[in-house]
Amino acid sequence: MCGFIGIYGPDGVDVASEIYEGLLAVQHRGQDAAGITTFSKKFNVKKGFGLVVEVFNEENMARLRGHLGVGHVRYPTVGGNQEEDAQPFHHTFPVGVAMVHNGNVTNFHELTETRFRRGGVRLNSSCDLEIILWVFQKGLADALQQKPVLEPEDIFAAVKRVYEEVKGAYSVCAAITDVGMVAFRDPYGIKPICLGKKTTEEGEWFACASESVVLDVNGYTRVHDIGPGEAVFIDTRRRVHRKVIGEKLHRPCIFELVYFARPDSFLDDISVYKTRRRFGHRLGAQWKDVGAPRPDVVIPVPDSSRDAAMGVADQLGVPYREGLVKNRYVGRTFIMPNQKVRKSSIRRKLNPIELEFKGKDVLLIDDSIVRGNTSRSIVEMARRAGANKVYLGITSPPLIAPCPYGIDMASKKEFIATDRTPEEIAESLGADYVLYLDREEMNAAAREGNERIEEFCNACFTGRYPTEDVTLERLKAIEEERGCQRDNISV
Ligand code: AMP
Image (cartoon, rainbow, N blue to C red; front, side, top):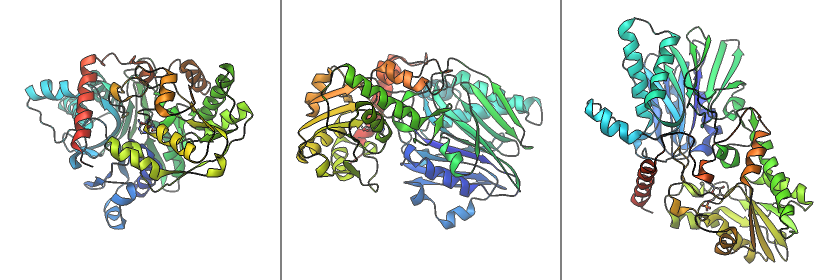
């Protein structure tokens, strides 16, 4: 799950500083590497490992000239953990294209090991974006054999080629030198992407990003979310061309709303903040319906569960308290390469306020349980702080299936919920009671924000994948590759 931004500004301006601001706003989507590529007379590139503030400085930003550019923050999933895998990627033939994406190509191996290999194509990296870029460029090259200048239809035909050949879930933005900027979304619209616009005295600016918060921080108005299988192309006269090319059923990822996105973002017109409040209300109602024990206090696990915890507290008529303090300067523990590091850094990251726990029956609210390490540590922390009973309310159903679309949930074996009942999960976590939000309730709460979406991708909760390309073999290959990568990283 990565974050990206593309900006096409008026002639003569530099867009790098806006891209930088945008990347800071989506830093939560990936902290592994960051990069910006702009185009002036040539491509200007800066990328590296680490946070946005670590990669960029005054000196390298000054080199990133140009009114067209793309930027990226990386969250490592399959492949792509070396320096050469950091995005953006650019190729110069048949025209200059710099590209970024969020998502995962599920037929990466088939394409590289069979079709590409037989055709003599060799990639520079193990990042799946390079495949998308290659197929897109091939489409443009074929068009340029027929005519000297690329037109919108040629850009859309190249996107169609990508849809036909590259399977999985991806949203993409590309700067095409002397031609414009294009952005497109996978046929099921699993990955989010939106378009924004602003007008200044210099002229019209367009921005494309994986979350609307990127537009907010740069003063753009959100024009619309790009639809499933839709491409948007902005030409050199800043005319916007839209085309639905490969649309299937719209199945946006529900986990974006549960955990990933910032609460101040809108995804497919749905407010993330309001959805999390609704998750909380519904979880609170469910808590009462099933006759779960009444707590004295509701405490969120910061940060992504705060809005939901307020909803639970409202519904139960129980005080909401901030009982856990987060140290903001410790990286996201989940990103750490192996179990040992993850365990110790959770304790580093959170500290309890004892007086909110002492002698009380506390209901801790979190968005999800993956392996259970976070919950186990927090339950233990609550007990040490003097809690009488420790209950857990989770604002999503049990996670049981790996995500082949780019969320790092590798192997079935790693999920605590695999082959366990909620009672067994509670026992394993040391909690007195655990309640997960019902799946139908979760979906209904999300749909309240946009009734046009009939279903969300629920694959991580059900093991049913909306794209027809996810086979057992592919899942196994992804699982093995992620497992190997983890094992190879030393602590
Ligand atoms: P765990 O300790 O493995 O159960 O991690 C669960 C915590 O990590 C939850 O509190 C979530 O907020 C967070 N989380 C869930 N899914 C992911 C993910 N795919 N990447 C990063 N963090 C996650």
